[in-house]
Amino acid sequence: MAAALTVLLNGCLLQTALCGTTEVFIPKTIEVLSGSCVTIPCSFDVETRYESDVGGTCRALWKSDKQTVVFNSSNPKSSTIQGELKGDLTRKDCSTTLNNMRPEHSKEYFLRVQCNNFRHSFLNHKLHIAVTDVPPAPTLTPSTLKVEEGTSVSLKCSAPAPCLSHSPALTWSSSLGHIQESLQENQDRTKVQTSVLTFTASHLHHGKEISCTAVYNKQDGSSQSASTSLTADISFAPQILSSYDCIQTADQLNCSCETVGNPPPALQWYLDGLPVNHSDRFAISSEPLNVSGLRSIITVSQPQQMKLSTLLCNSSNSLGSTTQRDNLKAHQDFVMLLVFIPTFVVLFLVICGLLLVIRAQRTHQIVHKSQTFTSGEANEVPNAEEEAIYTNVKELR
Image 1 (tube, rainbow, N blue to C red):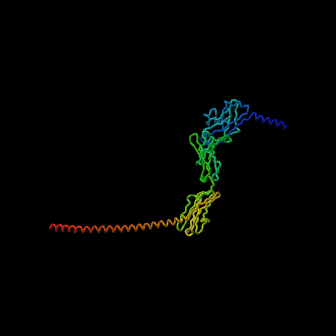
Image 2: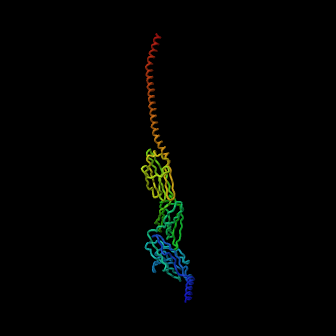
Image 3: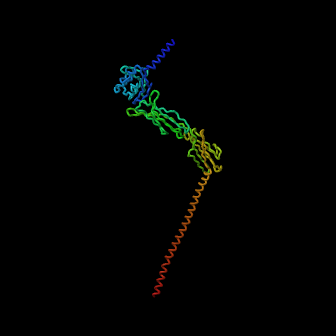
C-alpha cells in the first residue's frame, strides 16, 4: 500500500514537473491615482499540452466578473477601459496598461486568455485596483535621522510608480549632497521610483526639516503631489558663537556668552581660574538660545576693587568642551583710556579758548594803535603845509 502511494505521489510530481500548471502571476493589489494609468505586470503559464495553442491568435481579456469585460486586447479602443497590451502573449507575457482610471474602476479584476484551441479564466488569482483621489505619500528610509556630526548619511525616498509612462518625479527640500535616482522593481513586479540623497552630517543640519516630494503627472496634463519629511537630529560638540562680548565700566563688568551644541551644553564661568556661581557680587542669568543653544550673562560688581585678570566662559556636553578667554586687564586699561580721553579733550578745548582770547586781545591792540597813529598824521600834515606856504611867501617877499 505504501509502495503504491509512493508511486502515485511520484507520478503526480513528475506530471507537474513535465506537464506544468495553468496559472497567472499578477500583483494582489495596485494603488493608482485618479486620472492616471496603471500598468499591470502579468505573466502566465499553461500545461505542456497547450503550449502549441498559445500563439498569434490569442487575446487577453480583463474582466471584473464572469460577464463583464473591461478590456479586450483585440479591440482596445472599444473597451470599457481603454488601454494597451504591453506584453507578448506568445511569450506568455500579459502585461497590460489601462488608461485614465477613475474611482468607479476600483474593483477586482481577473485575466482570461482566449486562443483558437485554448481558453482559460484565471479566477483563482485576482487583482484589486484601488483608485484614489490623493497620491500616496513617499516613503523615507530610514524614517528618523539621529547621527553624530561627520557621519555619512544616505536617505532613500521611494514612491509607487503604477503608471510607467508617468512615473512620479521626486524632489528634495534642499540639495544637501549627491542625489541618485532609479526605477526599481518590487517582488510582485510593480515598479517604484527611488531617489537616494547622500551627504555628510553637519551641525548646520541639526533641527532642519528634510522632506521628499513626489509629483504625479496625470494623463490630462495636471499634477498632484505628496510629501514626507523628517527632522534631522545631529549630535555635535559645543561651539561658542562669535557674539561673545564684555563691557566694563567703573562700577560693573557685563559679559555675555552664547553657545550651541547637541546634547544642549552647560555653561560655567571662571574668574582667574576659579568657578563662579550666582551670588551677591556675581549675578549670572541664562536663557535658551534655540533648540540646541544657550546664552549666559554674568555681571561683576566693583571689578576694579577685585583686580581681576582673566574671565573664562566654558561650554561642555558629552561630546566635548570649548572655552572663550577674555583679558579683563585690557578692559580696565580701556576704561582708563575712556576717562582720559574726555579729560584731554576738555583741557585741549580750554587751552584753545585761551589762545583765541589772547590772540583777539592782541589783534585789538594792534588795530587801536594803527588807528591812533593814522589820526596823528592827519593832524600834523596841514601844519607842515601851512609852514611851507608861509616860508615860501616870506622868501618871495
